[in-house]
Image (cartoon, rainbow, N blue to C red; front, side, top):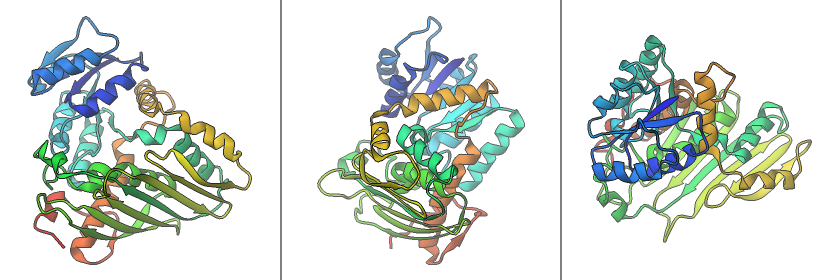
Length: 349
């Protein structure tokens, strides 16, 4: 299958490294506003196709014979570029987030359905062996009934980070700290615990040089009866501390922490694999390659676990509900009727 990539920034470099392990996909086109960035990305492509072309205008790339388009541009452009790619009759993979409003997310889903094309979102952590194994435990009942789960994020994003790209820290282009940095952990929470019923949220602003939040707390009630907690901040001093995942069930407790969910702080699963067997999985970190392989399976009509736009919308909607809850000072019930991140403009407390 032929892959075209729109956006050649830092996140694309990670994709290119992962694609070295996915021979089923051939990169045939790159597009970016900067020729220099395209050249840098081109140098990282492991197996160069003789067909490879560079386009400063992504619309020209969409006229090529690519089968799948990766959209890896600034968050605020994802909707319009994905929409154009679907209209050009392409399958589309979008870096998180899919869109910055629930209406745009649903519009893209409907368009993909009408075009009979597949629309995916990058939630690669689902394919990390250790995190995927937890999902298996839950599905097979090894943890029993899940009572509660918590996700945490403690990272540092200094002023220099926002100055390096003016779109960062804005509601209309960035979308918020939870949307940009925290969405993967919230996707895991929703993946594990199922459909969210209500969300209560509280935000806090520390830096005044940007619009978006620096601290976010959320309480989630799931339809299963479980409770979820979200604790996130991007002002951890002096540098990134890491992430946390805690799951407490009727027959098991699992706590992962560390800079990248790479430390087991607690592991007790009554009738499951041993702690050492679980720890051995932590070294397997090829999740993005596995994500692409599942997408290929999906496009070939094989059984797969690719994360579709519909599936990814759970995390997006949950974050939107948390934002709306803070603004309204009340819990918010799902599904949302409408919400866009620009609704938060002017909210500072």
